[in-house]
Structures are given as structure tokens and as C-alpha cells.
Length: 567
Image 1: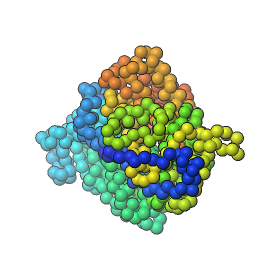
Image 2: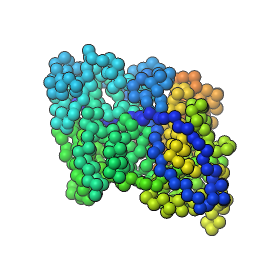
Image 3: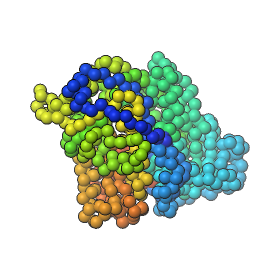
Image 4: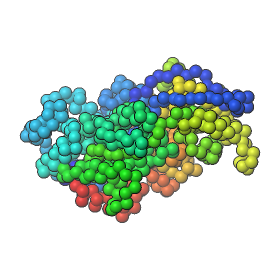
């Protein structure tokens, strides 16, 4: 049908170099200044990845690694830095399918429909065309010769209707920051960019419900809502480029998941265009509607394989006015888990983020940021670090809860039977600059490891007690094969939803032997531990052949049937 794969993609936010003044030592806060109020309203810049993907009529397909200069601004990764990690493109092993080849008459039809501003094709800017074919990591590259930029739902419908009749394959695209190769063509598909569909159509400040076009950049939507006293219940490192339609198509996770849940739970309605150009209008603004199937849920998390999300209605929360950030050192992952459990008990409704990173991950950031003012805020190195953020609307109330947590974390809960401190040291940010610098230590990990060499990224969910076992098992595997000196593994992620990001950086560049050592072993390890091979990045072109490890055969069959029927 018209889609060899339908995908949206998110994007990356350029990071800024932050100067960090001394933070307040935790023990002085707890022991000497327990009533000290450290009010904080950070305007932090998050820096974490986000991705999208696709599915062919025959099933999930894979893509190809390549070089990039394109959307490489993510978290401070410059185009030059991205180019330094370039490797030759690897051709996709996925079959192209019996799709038609683009003809001059097709380009003429699209120009007549969309105007010159809506079509980028052969004969135009080759560098610009390459941006839509390559992913930001420089790992995948398609061969599309035509990018279409519709500005309305009607134009999207007309494009897909024509493509379906002509047998032209299509890949939708938003911000092109995916980490699993789903945001770029596998072969020579038409690229359908939604970036011109970037308007807020309606916002009800009383109910907190916004209607927005699918191509609006997440950060732009959040800035619009900030003026109304609201916020998007989603925070990603890619927020400066990723689109809200792509976020919905991938059911994006991110840093606010602990507080506001999945994006799936905050979307009320969706308008989507199917492969044949028909428009599905399920754009409800009702929080309760129990009539028939919940069709919006079918498209959320489908990674663009079932249709193009053109508009959506979103329930958004009020923006917090009191925000605090603290950073702790722990001796082992057991104490990391205890810190998380204590934070949930003591901070309750104001707890908005709990992130962790091991020492190797933080060292990659410190090495990359050397000379910028970013430093380890703790006096000594620790095996693990935990970042905790609170957000609320009452500064006095929030600080009272935070101080109770700090006392328990540093001194132990005498009445709980847990015994002993759960952290060894810590700091509390005193202003926005310090808060952003602390967040940089967590959010800069992915880019730092990418710049240091050729990085193999894994995004998995596991039972919380087993999260870090995978990192340890990976290091043991590298050491057994004599690769521990040139391949460095680091673990970090979201404790609130047990989402581990495991990065393995080859300091000597791309290494197929290393890849063979990691896959499929790593995915099989996750499956045996009853986890998921993709927590938030999706399947894309990286993991289709391993989908059976996280989904039953009957579920995969049903997904294929739904895909075929909607095409």
C-alpha cells in the first residue's frame, strides 16, 4: 500500500554551557540549617533523546547507519562533532517491496498541490535533501528524492491518496531525532514532513485542554502554554525540535513520566490520515467518552505505522511555581533504590523526577565539559548518583517536605526499621544556574558518549531490582572478550519507570565484533529478566527481528493484521 512505513520523529535541543557556582552541601543543609529555605525556580534545558519508527505491511523493518550534519544541535552536539562520529552508510537488508518509482509527473502533481514551498525534490538543494534522509546520530540514511511539506490535513490526505493510487511508499517525518532509525527512509520513500503544520488551534484555560497540529515543535507548544500558566506533561531532551504529533505516534516517555504518566494518558483525541487518504476524526476534547472503541489509543505508540497524526487534543497541567533540584552520591545500586523509595514516601505529590547515573556515565560528561565550568558538585567521586527534582505550587510546603526527606536520607529513618543513611553526600541547587548545571550532568551523558567514539545505545525496561544487573553483565562480557579497554559501558536512566539507558562506546570507532557481542545477547538477557527490549525509543529499524522477545506471537500477528487492514 502507500506506506512501506509511516513514521514520525522527534528532535534535539542544543545545550548551553553552564557555569556552576558552589551548591549547598547536603549535610550543612540537614544538620546546621534545617530551616533554611532554598527557593528555586529553574528554567532547565533538558537534553535527552527521543525517537520514532515504522512498520512495513510485512512487519517491522530495519534501517541503515550513516553520517550527519543535520539536526545535530541536540544537547550541544554540533554538526562538526556529529561528523567526527561518521561511518560509511550501511545498506538496509529490508526488502524494498513492490512499490513504484518516483516519476517527474509525480513531482509535478505534488508541486501543483502544495506549491514550490511544499516540495523539495531532485534538482533542489542536495544538502537540504540529505537532512531529511539522515538521522542525527549519523547511523542511518535513506535515498528519498522527494520531500513533501503539506500545511493542512486536506493536503496530507491528498498526498496519501495520490501515493496510494500510484503505489508510492511514504515515510512521515517530524523532527528527525529518533534513535532507532525510524525517522528516515529505508529506501527511496517519499518523505512527508509535517513541520509546516505547526499551530495551536485552540486552548481552554479553564479546562487545560489544547488542540494543536501534529507538526508543532514540543518546545514551542510548551512556551505557548507557559504564557497561559500551563505546561506540556512531557519533557524531552529533544524538545527543541521534536513534534507533538511524533511524540504521540511514539508514546514518548521522558523526564516527566514519574509525575504526569505517559503521553498516552494525557491525549484526549486524535485526527489521523490513513494510507488511502481517508481522514479519521476522533478529535474529542472530552475527558470521558465511553462510546465504542478508543480509536486515538490505536494510533498512539504505533510509531507512525498506521496513519499520520495531523491534529490532537491534549490535557495539560498547570505550570509549577516552586521547583527544587538535589544531587546525591550513593555507594551502590541498592542504596540508589532505597533513595528512590524514600523519595516516594517523603516527597509524595511534589516529586517530579528521579534520575540515576553511574560514575562512568558522569565521567564522560565531565571529560567533555572540561573547561566549561561544569564540574562534579560533590567533594568526592561516588559509584552512583541520583538526581531528584520536586515541583509544586507552594514553596513553603515543598521545602518542608524536601527538608524532611533530606534528614531521612542523610541520617536514616529511625522509626522505619530501614536503618542508616541512604546517601553518602549531596547538594541542593540554590538557583536556576545551579539547577541547570546539575541537570546537565544527567542529560549530557548521551552526547558525551557519542562524541567519545562510536556508541551502541540500548533503551530497556526491567524490574527495578535488576536494572543495573544488565550493565554489570555487559561489562563482564566485554572483559571476557578482551574489549574492556576499548569499549566502555555506562548505565543511567529513569528510576520512576525502571527505564535503563545502557550505552556502550567503542573508543576505536565502529566495531562489528562488538556489535555481534552485544546483539542478540543483550535483548535475550532482557527478555529472560521479564523486561522490554524498548522502553521508550521504539522498535524502528533496529529491533524488528527481536520484537518476539517482548510480544507474544499472537500479538505480532494481530499487529500485522491491523496494519494490513488500515493500509
